[in-house]
Length: 243
Image (tube, rainbow, N blue to C red; front, side, top):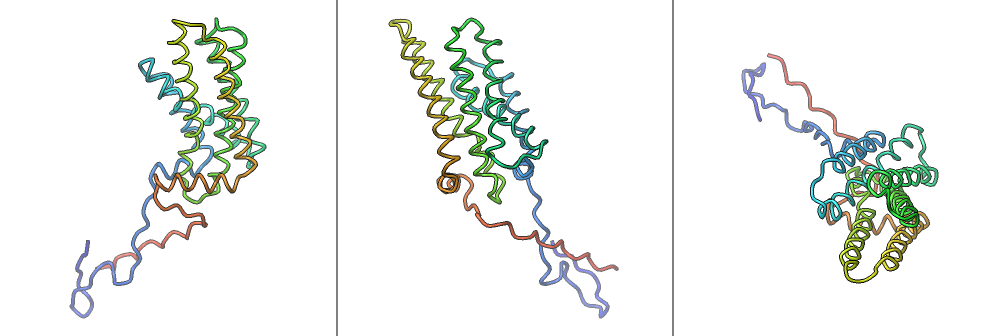
């Protein structure tokens, strides 16, 4: 908006004056939250557990709710802990992610699947351990990028693997009404867990290539993503002249 005030010579003076820099754009929540690892971990943890506790419908929970929200909750706890401890190196953060995932698997077993066989319990813990570790490895390659929004995609790969695992379990559960599917279901779960662990090793061992591949996919969602440090924020506009 342009305001006109009386100039000393009696003529109108436009405000802001020509050449003044515009006010800097205020960062949105989706930019501020992931920029701080502690805040981001807390947000993921709270959103994850809210989604776990308040989602409705078994099918929706298996295919959408659990893959999205459980992975958020597991990474959120680990990320908040390493942020509080000031741990920056990804390889030092990995044990916290694995511990968070394993603890979630144990909790899920006792709260929901307490009567499952020991082998299924062990696979459940191993699966949650593996996907939580994968999320932390992906976070490690996205964190250095200056556009903090990309960190919201940290758990998407783990969520996709989680959804595949749950869909497979649902398929074998339905098929189990006609034939014995326990050996096949166990093998499938072990294969998915091994895939999550394998992808974690790939991301950790080839960080630059993994980051480049992630950027190609994320640019389709977020648009241009800079790989260089951010430029300084523009200076605020000058104060308007007095009366």
